[in-house]
Length: 321
Image 1: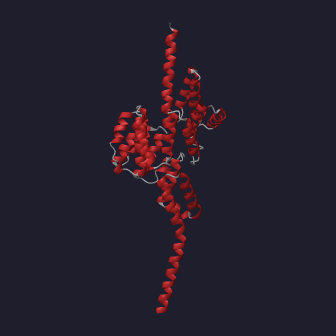
Image 2: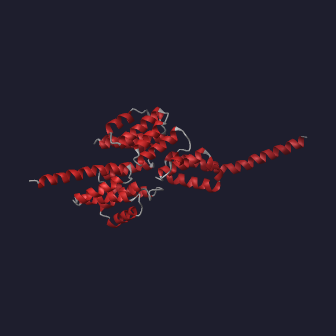
C-alpha cells in the first residue's frame, strides 16, 4: 500500500514536472508579449505573437492573446471589420472600434459606438476625440481636460495627452502642445502615435533633419509600408526636400489602389498649390475630399481648399477692375 502511494506520488510529480516544462516557454513568451505591449514595442509584440501562433496555437483563443493580436493590427493600421474588433461587448473593444470609425472619418458611426460605452471617463474621452476630428478645438480641449487620468488606462492617458496636444496646436499654442506631447512621450516614447505626433511637429516647424530621422524610425514599424496616412506625410517631406524620385514612387504606389487615389489627389493638389496653379489644385483637393481619406488629411485638405478658394476669389475680384 505504501509502495503504491509512493509510486502515485512519483507519477504526479512527474506529470507536474512535464507540465511545467511544457508551459514554461509559452508563459515566458506571454510575459514578453505583455511587457512589449506595455512599452508599445510593435516589432516585439509581432515577434511574440508569431512565436505563440507557431509553437502554441492552442493559446490563440485566450482573450489576452486574442486582444493583443487585435491591438497590434489596429496599431499597424490594418483594416479590420467591426466583427473582428468587437469580439467582446465591453468598453475596451467599443473604444477601439470608435477610434477606427474616427480614423475613417465616420463620425456618426463613432458616436453610435461610443453611446454603448458604460464608463463616464471613456465616454468623455471619446467625445473629446470626436470633437477634435470635427475641429471643435475649444470644446474638445475642455472635455478632454476634465477627464481624470486616475480613471484611464495607460494607453487612454496617452491618447488624451496627444489629443490635447492637437487642440493646443490648432489653437496656435505651441508651447502647451509640446507640454502635452512630452507627457505622452514620457509614458511611451515608442508609441506609434507619439512618434507620429513628433513627426507632425517636425513638419510644422520645417525641421527637415528631425523629420528625416523620424521617418527612418517610423518606416521600421510594422504596417507603415502600407499605411496611407504615413506614406502621404512621407511624400510631403520628400516634396519639401526636393527628393523627386521618392516623391514620384510614393505617388505611383498610391495610384495603384482605389484607397490610395484620394491621397494622391491631395498630394498633387499641394504641389500644384505651391506652383501657383490654383485652379488645378482646387480640382485635386475636391477629388481628394470626395474619397475616403483619414481625418487628419481631410482636415488639411479642407484648409488648403479654403485657401485656394480665397485666392481664386481674390483673382476674380481683381479682374473686375
